Structure formats: structure tokens, C-alpha cells
Length: 259
Image 1 (spheres, rainbow, N blue to C red):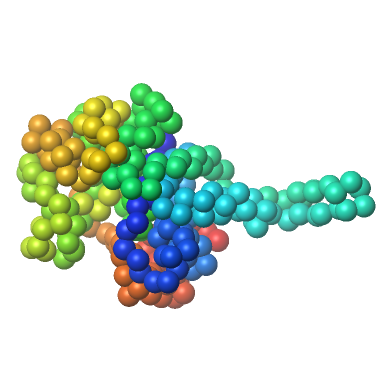
Image 2 (cartoon, one colour):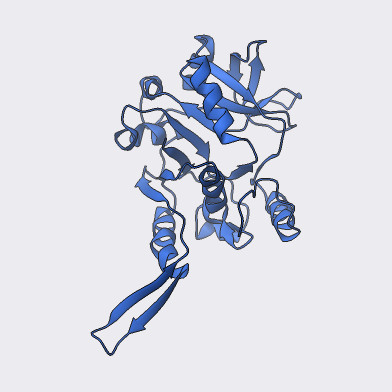
């Protein structure tokens, strides 16, 4: 199953770094937060990624282009016709497609643009600026069992994100974006989406968290996977520092893989 990661928006500018690179490429623990998110999925065996790029999209492409060289042992032999010999590779078994989904395209439009790369398959989708310790395999199993079009992961945090009204059977009865924090479950991303989702997105100007999710909720096609563990977005310098501190002290809940 492919994993789609939204990494193309302007987003919040959390430091001077954002002037030179998209927020998903800002590093925590020496690696872009995008890399951490991909490692989460890879831990559960999901290794094919589609990155929806836009703002400073060249920075994402260049990083992956260099990643192979930076993580391998290599001999550059200039005596034998400028040969390059790779002795040992330390890269993950990833297949990464980076798609320029436009500079000003909204979240729904970015998802719509990568439809040719997904095809007629169920896929996962999340945002490129938050980490989580959700059990992704259980999330996928939950989605496959209920048979609805979309599943999102919900967490109980006092944040100003997408507010959810969840019924007793885990169906999302309504969805509203960026309202006043009131202790209700919020949309943490980490979604599983059937290919029918593309029918709910008109074009580049569609905000995924508006009409598509609201319509799915109204039709009973949006389900919530409740997560009681860790989730943290990186919208501010303070949040970046929190994530850095957890990594430095080897207490990062989302880091389940071995170095």
C-alpha cells in the first residue's frame, strides 16, 4: 500500500530555515521530520512513498538524490576513468516518488494531482509536519474492516485542528476545521483512503479538510481510528525544540526503529 505525504504547502514559518527549505525538510535529530514520518511507516512494512511537493520542492528532490551517497560507503577512483564503487549501502528499502503538485495548490488539489501515481488502489495519507506512535498496521486493519471510504486518526489534544464529532460506532458524524479548542477529538492525519476519495476533490482550489471531509462525514463514509498514544505536530519553534529534546534524551515515542 502506497503512502502519500503532503509536503508542498507554505505552512507556518517556524524559523529562518523555512525561507530555504519546506517545513517537512527541517531537521530534528539530524534528519528531516519527513524522514522520521517515513521511518514510522517503514517500521510497519510500508516502503512506497509519494511526496506531494510544492514550496521549495527542489530541496526535497535534492535531499533524496544525495541520500544514497550520504548513507553508503563509496570509493571514487579517478585512476580508472572516474569510477565510483559502492561498497556497502545503508539506505532503507524505499521507493520514493516526489511530485511537484504546484506552489499554490490546496491540500485536496495536491492529493488529486497524484491520482495517476496511486491508481485504483487504497492508499495512506498524512501530513509532512507531525510524528505519531500509532500502530499503522492496526489502523489499516480497522479501515479494511469497516468498508467505508476514509479513515482518519483522531487524538484528544487541546489543539486548534480539525474538530470531530464521533459517534458510538466510530463513525465521524461531522467535521469542522480549525475551530476554538474545546477538548473534542482532533484530526491527527494518518489516514487510509479508498480511491473513491478522488471523486470528492474538484481541483487545485479544494481544501481537503473542508468540503471533502465534511461531505464524507455527512454521508457516513468517514471513520475515526482513536489513538490514545503520542502525536505532535511541528508548527512552532517550541514544538521543534520539544521533538529535538525527546530525540536527544532517547525518549521519542514515535522512534521504534533501531539506529
